[in-house]
Length: 387
Image (cartoon, rainbow, N blue to C red; front, side):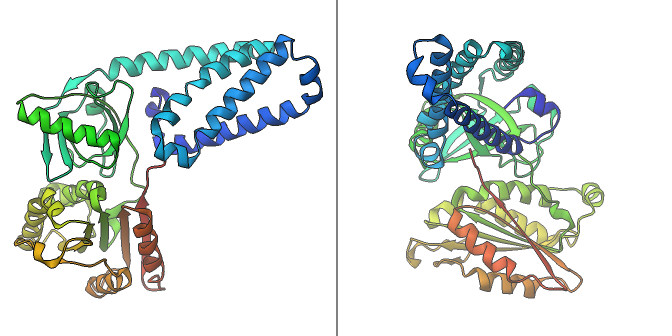
């Protein structure tokens, strides 16, 4: 994350790809370079040039090993703190390669200036709302920081958030649930150690009538499609994966007539499929979804909204009186058939957008691609966080 690429509007997601690629190339080059000096390494190990080269190689391999997917996803703190071995790598390379010193000093200078800008722009601020909603979710609202307010955030974007009262070093990405408003809404589900602490902290803050301190970095990411140009939308959220979809729905259904005309919306139908383990989790956004469905029914300029909620673990005794709930996993082939059958006669394109577990996304992907025809284009997109 750095201010240079933010200024150039290069998405953080794209930079992660290049960051990994350059990291892999650097470590591979260092290993190949070392192989040419293996015979000398054992004999001349007392020489500083070999000591520093070997130290740089160890730092690079250490960062690479602790960055593999298994470690990154299951032991995030190990992944995070091990990355600071880059300091040892830079120092060792500086001492090892005299000719590279001007380039290293230039890079370190820019890196230091960038970190100063980030520290100044990510100062802690208070939330305006923090509370526990449902059994294991926290709702967090805070005013947009000045630099964030200058950049209009779009549906599907996310921010990195830090709660200094819990940890001064842990930053985690969360999807933005709010629309184009002067504040940012986040819904944080207790899925791991840190998020469980956040939900507990929200409960304690609400009980004592106080707000929490929060630091925000972003927004990052951009939806790689323009959903306004499709005749039908199929939006599928798994659990808390509904959050970026709520942001899309707000952008569609909270528009006035002038905004609708400016956006040249082609959407005629929106199919929302929300999959969750427990029926009680629907209370997070059910009132809002009912409001949008009512708006769509009253305003012919808005697309029709069809809502399907699937519960995978509760028994049918947990019925919700606001909407009918299907107590089964969705058959995405049947879902796609229904969506195609309901589409407007003039519609020739369908957008399928999914955010949720990998297995769900893959099943929907298969079902979507098999519905592509000459007279109907089905485009599939999915949300994934590869950090």
